[in-house]
Length: 164
Image (cartoon, rainbow, N blue to C red; front, side, top):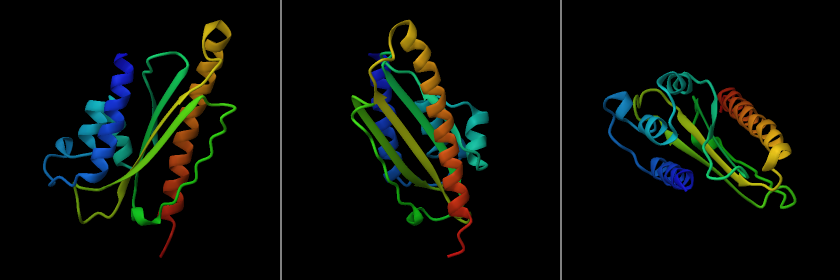
């Protein structure tokens, strides 16, 4: 139950961070750093990696073993207007799934163009409980995390390579 509340708080916070434009001040108190630290639970070195353009993805605690919750983010030196995303989910594999991606403009240095791409993925899947399911879950969760990291890095490279 605590994890379900935490995921809802992270989800709601991500939505709020995408709309709020706070004034620049101490870098750790400016969004999205406060969000990344307090709600997602990232460490300072992970936040610094994101800030420096490295894609970081992590698994969030879930309330049950059949839920998979993944968070990822990367800083992109481009404009968020260049983003379009397609999402496909097959009901055969997921009982429920949620995929939220938001762009948060750089607030700490308005002279430095760019934004933070933040993605939250949540799904509930059958077959992830029990002994065999536990093994399947570990592999599936790790692949989901690493796949999200690669997708964020590819998006960053593609957007930053544009010259328009």
